[in-house]
Image (cartoon, rainbow over all chains, first blue to last red; front, side):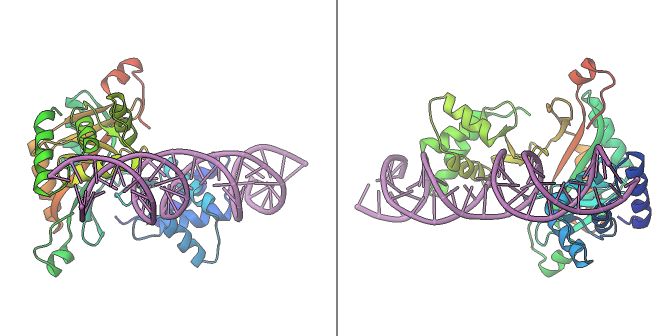
Length: 154
Length: 154
DNA sequence: ATGGGTGCAAATCCTTTGCACTCGG
DNA sequence: CCGAGTGCAAAGGATTTGCACCCAT
């Protein structure tokens, strides 16, 4: 999903200011790495990306900052069944779902209002007050289908 | 989701036989614990449950057997963001989704054919061949809403 | 200055693995 | 009998935490 990295970074600065939290260069470096990433990064990915830009940030700080981004509502945490978490930048109102290729791991996204409404409705039908959800579809992506037309998921 | 534990156990025995795998009492105890559980159990839960029935099964074996159940298609693995996995018995064709209470952790289930069809359709729209999916709705369950009408998720 | 932030390394937590021993078929 | 299964304890991998030192405000 396309997001405006610069705008998110701006919002993050405002968030830090509003909460009396210092805007350290480590925090900004981590935030930038996430906001300008075109994919879902793991904590390790973030570390590599940050290091590549010349700023070495300790592992603990990376995790602490990722947490901060999530709490600030600027990033979303994902668990794609790999044994570790991934993060993606999140512009307000950008609800979307993920298709994960069981063959190559590539993630394809899509969004659909009817789907969102139906999910909310179905939850309410079992007297549940929905806040947010996570939908992951596992299967075979376009390019893997071409490589191997018979590819089966799992 | 209601499942016939006895039938699943029967299927598991058949699976073991068909694959030339010994039906050890540890395997049967773990399978029984999962199949007759009314909820989604963690590996630790399974261990406790099995121990309570008098059979002490090593941790490694519990994990190995849970894996076996999943591969046999008789149990499903879940990751509800708690940092560990949970397992539930799975009768064939019993697709259903989960609502997880952010306040008490209780899991409510539901199923809806229209939803399933729509999910498959949307995936195909982005040229993805869906195999299975995972939908988790986070929010506040019925009883937590009553305890605290203003409860917000997260 | 000064309270929170950071890095490092140790600690946790869940899960997996190596290996000698045991058992189901 | 015998190869696969099991238990134990050690190993692993991701994430968290304790603590002395450092830096934005």
